[in-house]
Length: 299
Image 1 (cartoon, rainbow, N blue to C red):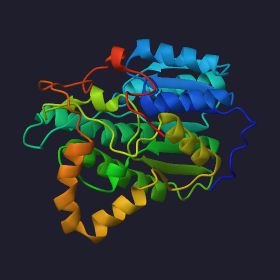
Image 2 (cartoon, one colour):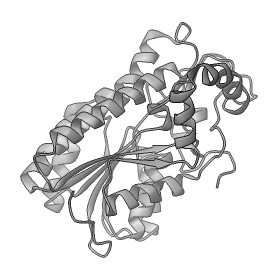
Image 3 (cartoon, rainbow, N blue to C red):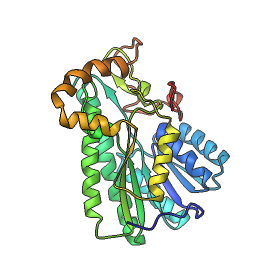
């Protein structure tokens, strides 16, 4: 593992999913350190808002690069522009993701595949693009925001579970394939329920929108876990107090877990509103819904 980062040294950090939620919170936390920021997301309007917040928080250099992580040419352009402007790329925080609720048989094929594409193929695009840069530098850190749902399964979130299990598998491969370069780190941060807009921005075929299951953490708390991982690289970081307990139940008592998880999810992770089937922001950015926080009380 590389030497822990000196917080007093400005870093060049590219953040995907920077227009909302954990990505936006991470950008603001990094701004407080004086990091040179490159913000990447699909929607330019929300990115500009995030950039203004980052500048207000202390960032002296903020670059906005609208790009979809599934568009390799666009993302490569953002990375090349970063290196050209700043001379290096120290850290990439990959937080871009979309979500869909509904049974596998109910969620349309194109929605299901898009959710999986963003996590799996989007992460592969990020890795293919930034790892050669890190190798030339002989240093760099890729931090990928995964999920508790990368290690357990629940009903009604089949596309997201598939996406995050696949992403975690890819992360483990990347960790193995970069062992030959001690200066490169690849880390996964796994949050539980977080107060971000992703739940009501999600596609849904359940008749309701989603909500984060308790305990609900603030996006700033998860962002601080990301920064802690940057300072002291680790393979997998849990950003949820009960994550280990829930994962243990999933693995050790699967029968009991499967009996309980459906009713508990319906009660604690599905909102009580009434909405028709919706694609949410799966295929295009919804600037009006983008923000750092969602609508739930957090700790």
